Amino acid sequence: MYQFGDAFSTAQHTLAVDQKASTDFFIAAAEKAHVPAESRLAVAYHNGTGIAKDDVKAAYWARKAMDAGEPAGATLLAKLYAAGNGVPRD
Image 1 (cartoon, helix red, strand yellow):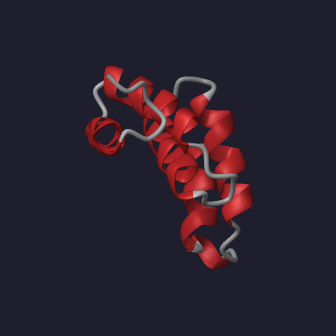
Image 2 (cartoon, one colour; image 1 turned 90 degrees about the vertical axis):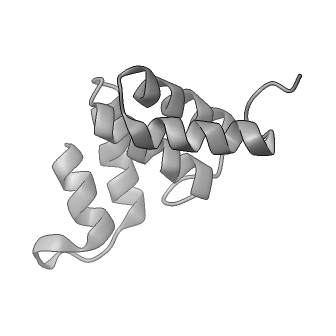
């Protein structure tokens, strides 16, 4: 599923770019604990790419990816904390 999401997001293999379809595939893969998909889904939620922008969900998926060892998840989560978006404030 992740490969389909990646293909739709970058128009590989002569597919047209379809961010909604790409995000749908990332959701399906992330829900099955596919770590790179968790990270890509976090970015999609943060940017509002193919799905409504939602920094709370972005933080959720970024944390899951980070906890599984994905550096991109850690980076996005750090940015969300730095900006105070989608995470609790002290």
